[in-house]
Amino acid sequence: MDSALILRLAMEKGESLSETEIDGLLNQSLLVVKLTRDNSSERLANIFKLVGLSEISGSQRLRGTQQIVKFINQEVATSEGFAYTGDLGGIVPCYNAMLLESYVRLGMAQSPEVVRGLNWIKKYQLFERNQTSSWQGKGICLHGGCLKATPCYIGVGKTLRALLTYQEYTANRDGEVANLIAKGLNYMLDHQLFLRRSTNQPISPHITDMMFPQSYCLSLMDLVYIVGKSNSQKEPRAQALMTLLAKKDLGNRQWKIDYIYRYKGYLAFDNRRGPSPWVSELSNIWLGVGASK
Image (cartoon, rainbow, N blue to C red; front, side, top):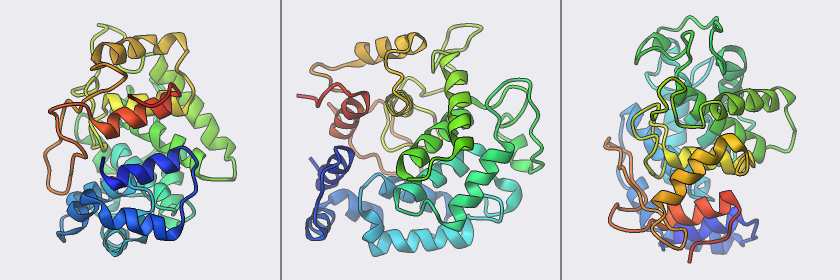
């Protein structure tokens, strides 16, 4: 088990570690070394690196993380939210949400960048069909259309995940965030979280695959996070997902990574050859069913 996972599990369980212990575990982590050893001037590469680092508790203390945050602030954050293209028109729900969540995990929930990204969600993100968004940026018209009459399901899922993280990490309860979470969760539960209502088939590629950390794809791990953090495990509309999870169980509540996203800067935390400690341990904690054996 990589020492970064020891750190993450301690955080998830609410255990207290000294600064010396945190620094020691960060310094021992091979994942930290891999995520911080190469500099890049590519926006997407830095986005995926930061998403990975944000999953490692305490990584905001690292110089490498701080350098990437500085890059994102200068090259990706805009006056309205996070844009993977670097320009205002390039804001799309999935990347805005992933970066918002990453910043929150890194202790920057009150930063201007998060405030702007959150306000974009409040003003423009759709969580229902047959609604109209007033956002005029060209990015939402690409990739099949993010905010059409039927909003992009990946964008809904990534945004819901980010809002759940924001709610967990911030002391002040935001009623508007809670309302958006309720809307997004109901919309996803109406799809049994991963199935098209018209055909009962998976909504998007890799939505039934385990991956960690997240990429722009909506994955089974994202759905486990959403179900667990929203306490929806026993919701009738979540049972198809729970059945899928049981079918993919390798034994003793362990799961493997099914899909590894390939792009510069993205680093899978485990391989696909056997049970993934990251996927298994975190899934069990989120679902409240005890650790894997």
